[in-house]
Length: 146
Image (cartoon, helix red, strand yellow):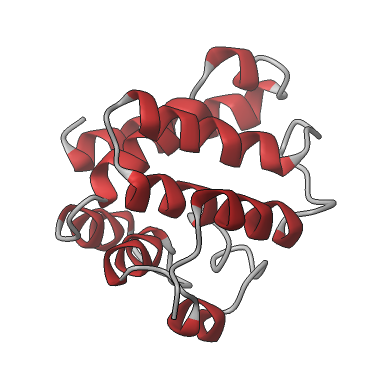
């Protein structure tokens, strides 16, 4: 099986999240693109960039775990996507431990948190939401040692 190219992974992610918006009402694919670019600028490799495009796909039910298991992706990319996929009811500490234990995942999560916590993105949210998310992202950064 020929591995998917980054362009193919991007196209799959964009199609899977088509029509979805973030909390500010922006197309969700803007977040995926920003995280992929954040991984690239932080020195991430192609496997990490592919994972960045797919990092929310299973968690958001845009793609299934079965799809991920059978997709033409490297085992490392699959492991990173799996590590970044929150489980229902999972404590942040357990989530952070899994990310830290998965080679390549911390960098992708760092880029994800950086974009999520971007003051320009948070500024358009109501104050209670902005406060809750700022605290949530700061806690995860601390758990990951970022």
